[in-house]
Image 1: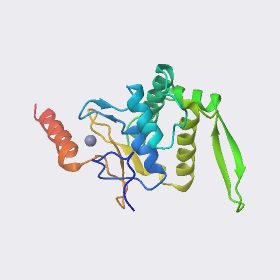
Image 2: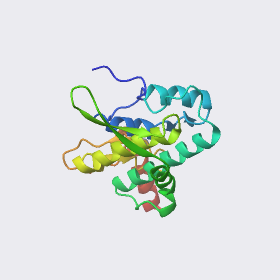
Image 3: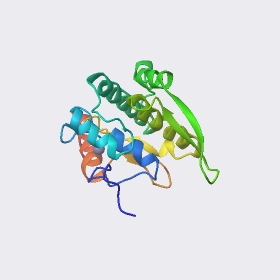
Image 4: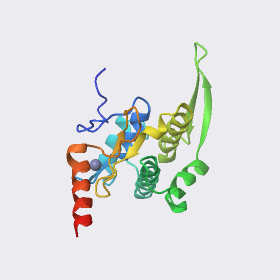
Length: 191
Ligand SMILES: [Zn+2]
């Protein structure tokens, strides 16, 4: 299977589908390069459309992009906790809670009888964000959620999927962030 176009090129530890969608959403902010795909309306529309999270015939407005970025950082705060960091603060979760209150799921029964859930209201950013919450909920039920973590390097916080047997992975990449932080801690101890 080829990698979907909405997955960052440098993704070395991808989550299984559909959790990969949540991971790629979190990684629309790249601390290493200082880039943010959810800042410019045209760029955000392009990425969200390719990821299946946006269907409206317009670009998201600034308030919608602000909500999307706050949801993204809320998810990242949970991924920090998944990586062994502190639990998310109440205000980390406010944007996700606002999405949960402003949107809903509509069940559909397809022609072969398969039941699906469509996020509403269609045409608003909340629907796409609710679709992400649904993926998170499923991952929390099947046990894959705890493996999605934010890198332990505070300057990085890249979301990675920990496939290690022991589930103790802490870095997006040992060669870069892992050694960087270990060397920093070593220097602090030596002082
Ligand atoms: Zn990292």
